[in-house]
Image 1: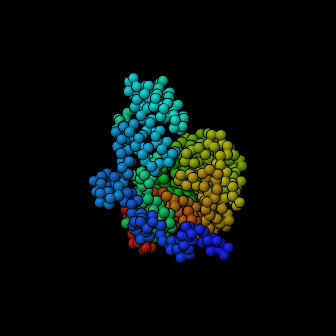
Image 2 (image 1 turned 60 degrees about the vertical axis):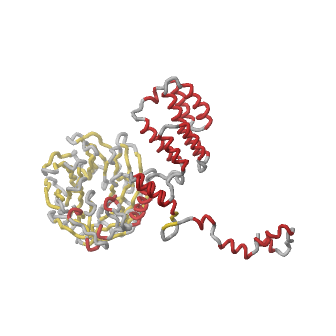
Image 3 (image 1 turned 60 degrees about the horizontal axis):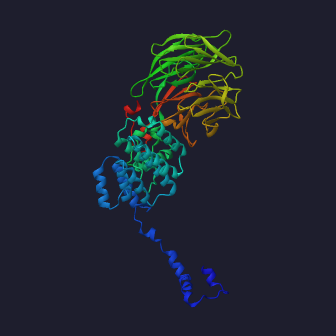
Length: 563
């Protein structure tokens, strides 16, 4: 406007309109632009940044007080602040709905100016439906119910399927009479549904404050690189941030019972036991005592060759051990006694896994096939001959899919029933091992190129994170999920160290030094989130725990928390 008026060819308007030129002169415009809008100037805020409106803040606190049943305190806050939680119209509407006064509720709804047409229609439908049902429940009032349906509900032009259901009830009223709720409880449920339809500025959700606080905690937790505490340990008194002392970083024990390289180890599902297998042809069951100390329980003798892997039954009462190119043995974990030996003529086993119900055993064999056995030793099924010798196997927790390494760089998820491919994971490099997350939504894949890939299995499988830093050139190195909500990835390495990464960001967190040989396998206790175990070619198992000296907040780990 100023540029137009200031142009040299511009002719001044008639005298009675010359005030426009003066009003939009440069000094005047500068003055107007420098002034805050009236709404900005009048809004009271709280907080140092001036972004929290006082009225909204007080209303949310009032709603939270009511949700906590601090009704007198909420009433007092409204009185003292002079900021009501609800407008007079909304307060009246709430009372009418709770009283079942549907006729007046519709009238009051029409007086609320903040509602758009769509919201008003949806809310009206909900109330009028109750009015319709009220007439229908009363004897000899079918005509009144029909009038509500035809003259008030149908003209709204929404939810036609529900309209047809209501019409059907006039003919066959049995569909609505069966209810165990009294009128007061039913009306309360209707009010909750109604308030959800209204805009938050009019009807603040009763748990709004809790939602805000939970979101803040989630953001702080997500931003904490070393987060490894249970939700029950979070506090509102300080901004949350864990120190390194929350992670297993210190050697708590060195277990040296095996007489040769330790190739595999795995904690039981309840976290009370640890099983390890070794090149010395034995497996050992260890017990995790109160306070975190790990002690020897049983040495399982019987294999004629090195023991490749172990697998805990779903209830942790039994253990499978798989000999290299040999047999699979099933053991009583409490007694240390062999219960059964699974073998097949001219074929050896290289991997084993349990079905979720503990009734079926899956075995990978040296002839590049899979077989299913019941616990008593009867072979139920056999198929394949297209995997590689290094094949690993597992069964999803739902028991509906079998996963295994196929053709070196591919992991296939087969349907349990028809053995058809349900999911396919294809890497560019050779896969050496893999492991599933607890919820079976993610897959951790170790590769020959010294990378670990995290795959999201939901929908179309895709890589969501890559972890680097460990070394691998000759051996099978295994990794695992671990920590609170499996927020970390741990892996062995041929450079004798244990590596830990932040799962979501992929950032390396620590490299744990202590072994004198390649670290073949790691296992994170699924219950005690502060305990990590590692197995090495040096013949030792190291138990790692938190180091309170590294906790920048000085929050120590007493024995009850290390348990």
